[in-house]
Image (cartoon, rainbow, N blue to C red; front, side, top):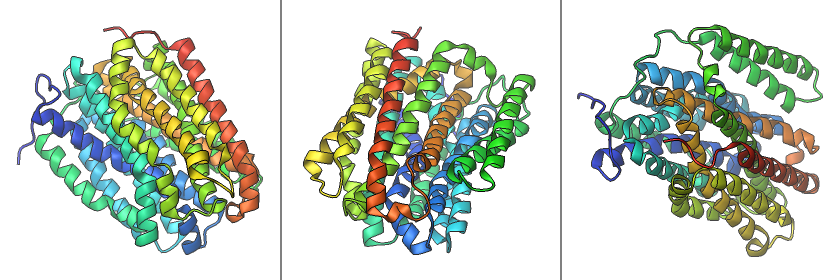
Length: 465
């Protein structure tokens, strides 16, 4: 079978346009689904595999670590070797690693499998968005990105619901095994319908030292945050910081950097990524703590905890594409400012979740408001990041923004439990967890508010045509 070549430009509403969006949503949706579905299953995984809180953090963060560390390399590979090609390779890799996750006999094996899963995600995630940016005509990119953001956001938001059903009525292992048939469908659509695009000016060499240093930096800092107080934490933190400095030096000196420093000379690109880090740090930590609070303190089972976040799914499904259209019409500054502030309000509203929780009064208003803010923000943020970079660097620009988002979640989930006084098996103690929960939620609200302020001060009212 021959693969399609890149056309002059694809339009929304055409069969090829729908196929590109479908493949991109299915592929990136698997990574977002696994990023959110695991939170619901953590308590059950901990009981089944006799895992400590630190191991549960690594089950969550091992995936984010390899994803954030290598996603820049994945974007660079896509720009140079073909975005569709790397998307397909990443999807197959992700599926095989998911199978290993589903068969893992111990917490240690599951952590390793999650790290491998993140590598696959690093290959396919930047390609999913870069395929859209490279294939669609400029006039339709905002709408296409909005559709991708909305449907992909649904995959992330529906994760807790899917996880709850599978954990309560089958096994936590199926939250990983379900990726296999999804991957098969994704590969078939991408191979048959998605045109190949690449950056013709890309060099043939890859920044392997940069990828290694990025992994060491994130790994060392994450280990130090999770194991804070342990004998190796300080040394891991020092190693991580030194590797971070060496990574920046490497990117400035090499001729083929996986994170081109020139992109950050654009103020909008830099500001959008700062805002991304703040918002996604809060998003990752809020999801982590809310789901555990509902299960540990409020007495919800996995399915009930998953259903509790369903309003976010509904908001993303029906409003994210509208958010993209609004950003195209009025410019990105307002939605990128108001969105995080609305999310901060939603986070404050779920502070009421406790042992005597009333879902409709204490949880539903907060998660609904949070979902409205997320739907307003996501597509304009993504479109702004890509518009601030040259089209030929769409893959690496997408990779950088995804890496920043995952790094934000990674750092927050690693640092906040220790910062609020949780360690060992205390995540299973309702009294201890209930005391830590409001502190964590307030921290998330502050991060979101800061993201809104950054947007107002730095994002232009309108992007240049």
